[in-house]
Structures are given as C-alpha cells and as structure tokens.
Length: 357
Image (cartoon, rainbow, N blue to C red):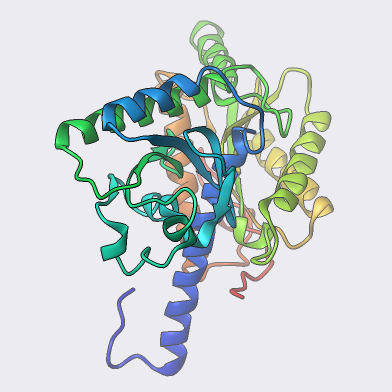
C-alpha cells in the first residue's frame, strides 16, 4: 500500500480498507481452491503416503507430513511418525510456509521468537527444526505444505530442498488427478478439463459450418459472498445452489464449467452476442434470487476466426473479466451492461454498492 504524507484521514482509511479487502478476497479464494479438492477430513489414501515417505527419506528427518491449511486450522492429510491430526492455524509452522513462494525453513525453533514458546515445540511432536514447501495449485493458490520435521536443530542442503520441491509438485499432481472426472463434485458443473472438451467441439463446429457460439465467463464476488466471521462452507452451499439452478435452466446444447475457485464459464452453442447478452441477464437474475447481496463480474466473448484453440478463447474472456473487476474496484460500480457492452464483449456489474466492512 502506498501512503502519502498528504493523504487525508479519509483517503488513508480508504486505502487501508481496500488493502484489507484484497487480503480477505485472496484468502477466501485460497480456501475455495482447497475446498475444490474435497479432501479435508477424508480417509487415508495410498497414493499420497509414498510421497510423504519419500520426503522423509530425502530430508533425512524422522517426521514428514502433507499439511493442508483450512480457515482456522492445520490438518494433516498424510503423516509419518507423529500422532496429532492437526493444530490451530495460528501456531502452525505450515501457515508461514503458505505465505511465500519458496521453502520456509526453521533450523532451530528455540532461536526463533515466533516458535520457541509454541506448544508444537515445547510439547508433542517437539519440533526443533522444520522445512516446508508450499503446495501450489495450477491457478496459483497455496493450499498447504509438504513438510519435514526433526527433534534436533538441523540445516537442509540445497539438493534436499530441490527434491522437496519436486515432491510438492507431485502432491498437487495427485490431487489434480482426483479432479479429472467430468463433473465438479460441489456444483455439478463440468470440470475445467470436461468443459474444455465442449469448447473444442464448438470451435470445430465454427470452423466446419460457421456456427457461432458464445462464451460467458463470470466470477462471483467472494467478499460479498462469504462473511469474514463465517467459514467457507456457507459460501460453498450458496455457490452450489446458484450453479445447480443455472444448469437446470440452460438448454441441452449449453453447458457450465467450473474454471477455478468461484470462476465459472457458460458455453452457449449456436448463440450470438445478442443472445449472450440475454444469457448474462439470466445469470444475474438467478444470482439475485439466491442472494441479493452477491455481486457478479461477467464478460462474454463471441467465437471468431482469430480464436484458434480452446485456451486462447478462455484466456481472451478471462483477460476481459480481470479488466472488468478492476473497473468495478475503481469506482465505476452501478453501471449497467447496456452502458458498457461493446463489440464482442460485455460487462455487467450489479448496481449494488460494494461495501468494505
């Protein structure tokens, strides 16, 4: 945050409020990314335990774990040589790991003011040294850590850190394999891979028969959807309700895909820009019926000759969606789609005022 000596008290408050909002949105998006894997409190899985064992051997430590960071707790999906199932997030070593891109290392916890009085250090599992590598999803969210721990001070060689990084990538790969089915477990929408198949069909149909299709991309505002004091489970229920309602109201030739987190896409096969405009109105109507306070950012893109492959089309729509979100945060709230839509693209922001708690 950039603060000027000439900022008024109101301007300073606005800047701090905006920064707090962005921090909250980032954390909410991270938690939704974790929820997408539907893995918290699940049973042991053979595919992950060998990775944890490999991490312990590579680091030459007695204990290792795959740790997931929920809203207020740390939960171990896989663990070796200790019995606790989790810990409060505010004392977790792994909570520090997810706050940076690279490894987080504590060589001697007794010499670190952040941890020397931690119950994880003074009591079981008696962590004296720690190394954690963030588990980063394909869309950039750090949902947990692959970590190793020892009961004595320890230094970790660069070669061992590199191996830990590769194993952390393997954990995410295994979690992604769980999502390779066609349907998203929470909402019933197609997964990104399943939706991409349908988009490729639409592009092929346009190439062969010049049948126009439209892609609608929308993102449900996390700040209005999840209260600061509530857990993301309530937001998930609302999200599932909205998307399932949307799926029921679409034509058999249309489809909905979950692109990631709270970002979804609708493919309207054989529909032009004007029909897509009506489709965006339909999306907003259903969202308002579910929760009148929710704000949705929407962009849409009509298929064109310069759209070569599926990823190009999704990327084009996503770039426009990001631009829309920035416009909304820049003070243009309350503008309607009719005021802002242009050739081949649209913008819709509900006239609801965005508020920062």
